[in-house]
Length: 536
Image (cartoon, rainbow, N blue to C red; front, side, top):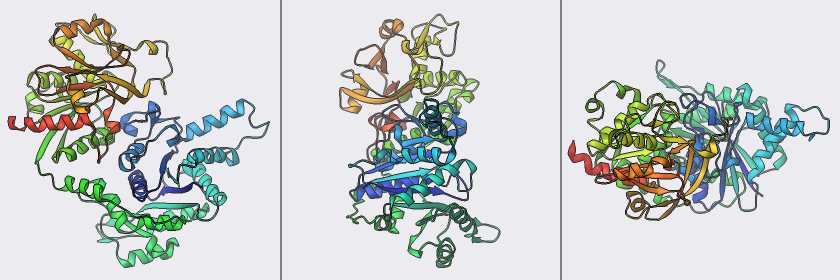
């Protein structure tokens, strides 16, 4: 029987439930168990695909084309778990399923209610991974205990544990033990109240994980144990780590969290081997090859989570090259009316990530020109690739008004145009080219050398592509088509000749990078940027 772990949060949001859940999954995987993960989000959007990056952060994309919460990135990076459409459910998706079934007569005239119909739908979603080849499913409940919108999910997991029987599921509650600077002490009362809220709806946490700035004392642990009704050994401190989030699983393992989880689920406690993980963490803490500064020119810079996977992939590449990557976050709009030397003059490499809309595009194009003409290693992703093609068309091919049809209706050189299969689509949500697609790489290209393979598969999220009408003109002036779809109809990777490292791809490689296995393109980009340090 598949076992279940439910992770809830209390006191405040942004405590790191995703990282905590992913850390538990990694430890259980290292003990030999097959783990699946999913996130339940309480907002009414069907998925985050139409939400602003400023509000929600990045949209993470799975191989099967689901637009999901960014916490799924933590799941895949930490535990090596492949997520899919069953890994992220929102209130909007749950209600849509129920309403659709009601319209089809699926409830046979019954009055449709939150209980039992919505909660039953949530339980059905939780059971999606209950198969013979899955040992444990970890389900993270978004939001905070006490939120009105989270109540149906909390009621559903209460019912689920009751129905699943003894030792088949457990509750892990992540809470905050704040340090009150004026008083000079930590307070357990907010955590006590958070657990009390859960108790009111019938949920009794089996394990309590406490986020804290300072170590928990024995007095704190005794209080939390007594008033939260959790055994002392099951009160786990999750103190802020000093160097990298990848230290979190190591800290939790040192307190036997994974051992306690397996004992509560009545599963054998197999051996735990963290040799590779500890070596990776050591490479973060002790980078023998110094530092390298990378400029990321984006349009959502003010919210770090907007480029979460980009920053993590750069970190992974630093680990692989044993160098510390210092990221300089650059608002693309700031470049539009400023000196490139002033803003970009101190970076060893430039990365331009994806995005939507015309705001800040001119700044991205200006940054790409600077990288091209000054031989600075450049890496473009999605819109970053499209901007690279626009810049090349304008400044090398003399198509002075070259642009994307997404941003200009008057350009006479739409070198980036809407994909044919997108032209009749009006709905916004879930309608882009999404998920994993194959790509063939050209012999002799940097991309092929980085991947060490002629054929790859990468995840996409876009509507526009390089306009094939202009390919010959671009090729004649030196642009290299380094990767295409198998039918050669779509340009997937472009490069430049006689440049230290100029690679841009239409897909999103950041989604497939992990700390133990950096993505080949990020690894190659950082290696090239390290060579460029002598310029500084």
